[in-house]
Image (cartoon, rainbow, N blue to C red; front, side, top):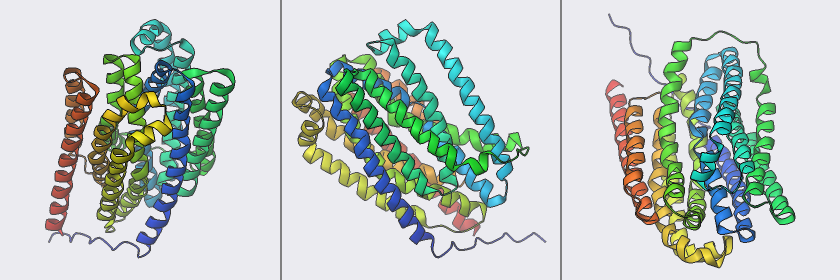
Amino acid sequence: MSEAKPQPTPAAPHQHASFFRQSGWLMIASIGGGVLFYSVHFLSKRISVAEYGAFGVMLAVALCVPTMPLQMVFAQQTARALATGRERALAGMIRLTWLGTLGLGLLLAVVMALWRTQILATWKLPGGAGLWITLAVVLLLLWLSMFSGVMQGQQNFFWLGWSNLVNAVARLAVAAGLVLLFTGGSTGMIMGTCMGLVAAVGIGIWQTRQLWRLAREPFNVRELLAQIVPLMFGFGAVQFLFSADTLFVKAYFSSDESGFYTSAGTLSRALLWLVLPLATVMFPKIVHSAARSEKSNLLGLVLLGTAILAAGGALGLTVLGPWIIRFAFTEAYVQEAGAVLPWYAWAMVPLSLANVLVNNLMARSQFRIVPVLVLLAAAYGVALTQFHSSPITVLKTLGVFNLLLFAICAWFNWRDEAKTKVED
């Protein structure tokens, strides 16, 4: 006689209340931090368009760091470890990754030293100092992603929010001081980014010390890789769709054109900072529910909230775009950046919705979508090398691939839900 399949237990009744409280705080922290983050871009009024374009490409390099997949790996592993009592194995994983990222940073430093001239020429950077600071930013972003993921998995959303706020305050203060008092240009602005990350990483290290200081316990490497590799590739593909366009624009267009494009991207990506807290809070809760065979109906709630916020934000940027650009940058940006802003803003809407669906699938360890995501990201990269006659053409390509991403994610979620109902 076959053994009966255990039935999922209902989620705790206070789940929705805690979700709204935690996501509300993270949204406040994200909006507040976002205002401070993007206040740095007001400094574009004190530097040339070419210098601002250089700052934009250094930020784009940082955006290509796999922060999203790394954070989600640690969020998932932390939530699973806390649900199953494997905290000591998690401690070993944290320390091993910490050491590995340091080694990666040293390797990147060697590569930069060997090809410094070629990198500066390709990205049209004014000097080498900003390049070395960008390397420090890359290393700090890896550490921040790791410790933020642990805090997310702990559902320590209070300090996760404060980490974001402190990061933004330090970034703005240092960048403003260097640009306004010492004419720091793009180098001063990226230095502000670096110092903000130093402060945020410090908070993450302190808040997670009770986990990473535990005595190390051996863990099953094969089982761990079976979870980590799909997460890295799945979320990495989504992050590539989120960030790669700026690097391609920098390579194919002039410094001034890339500066205008960067300004539109800065405003449009703010939409994701508005809606990401919903998925951030949802992810560890679904991981925890799946580990304990509990039911969770958060997905529909998060998807609806994301759709309303993202579409409302895109509509606002479309209507108020010229005024916002004039306020945030200068009159010189209005015509060029204003032409691409609506395209950019609406391209972010399907990406926001797809991100929620990817979070749901990854939290439930439904990894069949991952090869499709990787192929889609690769096709997007190839498409950008072919369709770049103008910045709007680049954004049309981005919009098409984001719609494809959303459609693919929706189909895999529907299939997963249908399969679950049949099994039940």
